[in-house]
Length: 344
Image (tube, rainbow, N blue to C red; front, side, top):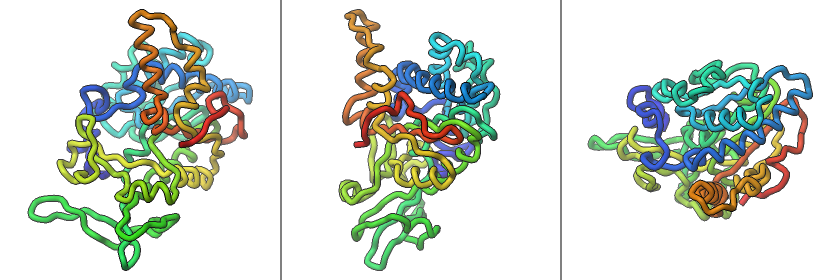
């Protein structure tokens, strides 16, 4: 998965500056339009207010998995229009492993390019502000394990007659047995890389917040029974299949749902406070999405309401996408986007 997605020459994300959208392989909340970024700004401005009141002189906005910078552009557009004091104190850092995506960031940012202080493939040090990541954790490499009559085994990748195939192998890491209760022949993913990323984010964050959006679930017997073959899938042209993830490496997006329980444990162990984990719907409604909608019948108003519906629709982005917010060095503030909601 690491090679198929991130190989510097042949990896899926390395060979194009943008992979989502109508002409890509999948949709994200950013592809719906600027509304997602406009609402995130409301939360970021509140976070800046808390840090500023505690003596912070600037606000570091760090977007991890930033791609070509579209979400950052939407955030900065809205910040410059509606939160000018916040915008004036904002310092932008974009973290992206794809060199082709990084090369497109300045053009994407346009008039906000001067706010970009760094673009690289790794998190910065001493962040005072917020680290944001939209659909990053689900694209980090995972381990796949399965229960056999002899106990837990790991699924590896081998070669047979010129084709990639699954092979059974011994567990490659002792942490792969933690918290798993599988029936015979059932499979599950273990996101050790996602947990490692959380630890790296906690080290980078000196004071402030980590705001994440991703597909995820709480580990439970019901979940395991609902997904006996796990959630690892390959996306191409907006179609997903669980059985062909080894076909055409580097040509499809590989993804697996995020284990929210494991992310929370990793965050806590790294010194972060968990403030909220809820469906994206409740986060966006808490930030005033409904109040922003135009009730008119012109094209712009209709498009705005359709975008809002897509972002909060049950069964779509609204419920499958989860919002997670963690904090460090700021206590446990009651943030506007975390005032209410639940996890489905």
